[in-house]
Length: 255
Image 1 (cartoon, helix red, strand yellow):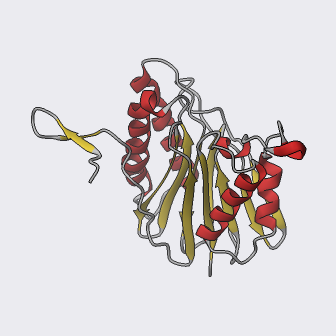
Image 2 (cartoon, helix red, strand yellow):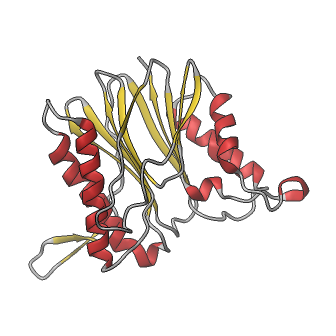
């Protein structure tokens, strides 16, 4: 079995890889992520329960190759989990303020860990089970897509990528998720994948094609939706060797 830890001289375990994500059970919602590739770049997703009614979700892309940015991936995940639990654990909180503060902390610790600047686009969100609301920050990441009975809207950037400026902040926004609403997040590596063949060669898959997959998949589970997106990208690229990490994450409110 592969170990995700090594031991220091004091026998204290030290992470050498980001901790594998085990999605929490969410009352009234379905969540999943699907990844294709060899994990050579800095994509990673995570989710953690931070209170009886709140679950944090994140899709981040630390710039650079994985062998060079592993320390930053671990730093981002540890801050996301530990600070997330501290900020969102109380019953009566301002979720927008907590989400902004979480991004400030991840930003600061990435800069400290890199001894400089290191771009990390990030989409982080808090889903409230009872209310069906989603509070999110999009720090320079690919837009999220939210589908409901009125159509599909883009959850665009609310600030600069993390890891660049020590005092930069990202605004937080709140959206409601009605029954059957679906949130879809995809990595930059997925939307920038180039097509194969005479018709698609040299053209990126793009977010608009992701939108079409979401629009035409009204009754899929979260995992099926993610798989459908990755399958569409593979077909578009002509099933050539993967151009980069490709990740899709979906959250669907079921009741």
